[in-house]
Length: 317
Image: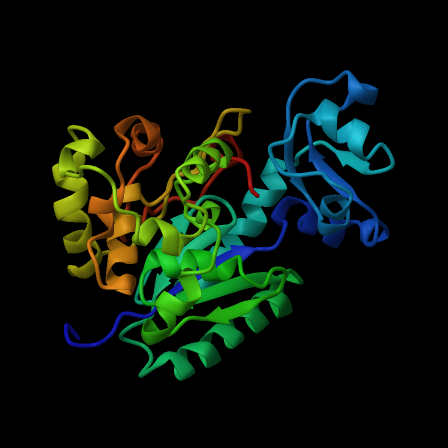
């Protein structure tokens, strides 16, 4: 199998918390729904855990302060999170998804990576398998998901967000460069709003801009003391024989961030797509140091025998 091209799925449930609430309360469908802290008519503290697409069209976003969400959309239905229910549904979905990949990694409550390389012959067959997975989840749980298919985890993750909700995006290895190049750099896992603003000042607005950026100087030292393990080890971790994992889920709080593939790993994948050494093209240490500190590189590891519990859950997006 070492000579075969890798084919990775990223499964992402659509507005998971609110989708589960709509399933349980059909009268909510078509209305803006927000799961999060008590807004207290605009005086509440805390954040939006998840909102449905009706609320998003009105300007509400996950992670937004709940007081701001109330001012933006006072007509929405505000619900407290029911983590025990979300975990129970998530466990059922993950049990369905796990059997479709020979390697599996759970990413929080509503996402998962699957390596299907040994189960399909090509991307066309992978697309058929992904459709079956989507259909089985909907048939059994009455919930939709979006799936991205790519040659590595970064591409699959970006692809799953490309046609939400209920999307299926296939990016063949030879199409990766054309797919990534025009996308905003914000699409990368480790780039948030502030980092996007800093990159924009440098003239880096798209992934192509980042891949071709030419700094005054470059070097591995820009990444910090963890650089050798990330730069030299990540490709080995992604290519070597991997094991399944049940990823731990954290209790939600306002400052929780998802665990992301590290910036070095992202740039490694960009390097493969653009045929260069993308990690050398990132200059300012101060710009990306915080990204590295907030990122964790993960592979596919052993499953944990226990199911998740409500005390382990973290926010969905």
